[in-house]
Length: 242
Image (cartoon, rainbow, N blue to C red; front, side, top):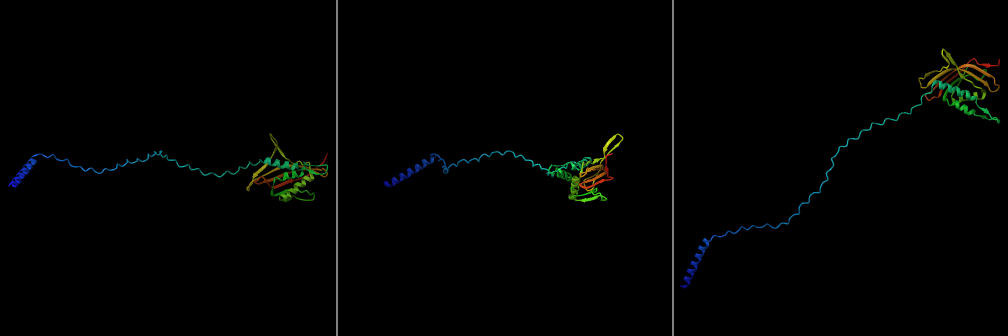
């Protein structure tokens, strides 16, 4: 009987406790936030290296085109000598052929130099028409080539002295003693000149003197050398004392 009473009382106490608990307001529990696992902080990203600003690109103008270099000009030729100068030069060298002398030993001094000086005027293939040096020959002598002309010049230097070839002068109105030189350009290059002369010379062996009027015709090539020569001396007469 006691046991039943005890059970009855225990049930009664439990009911009272449940009723009391239902009437008491329950404080809500704060929601449990699950903290995320701690993450290792990443180091801040390294900023890229500062880029040096490039200077503004200036557009280089294309190089100026150098005009083609013209070929070097041909060497300017010296001006051609005047016809009067050519005539006087030829006469002076001819007259100088007798200006040499013999030593006491009989050696010729200066003759070869005078001959060579005269021969500087002639081209290798010169053609010359000259008076004969033989009293019995009729007509002019034709010399072809520089070697044959040199023999003629050499003979003059050995056989004649006191050479005096001069240009004839003309006087008219107020002009007195003017030297006349006739010149013309040659179609193949060069120039031709002609002039009148009076020739005078003495023979070396006996000093007999001769003279005569004449004329000279010279053709100079583009190089300034004589290609053609014609020396004409007519009416040769001996000069005698009165």
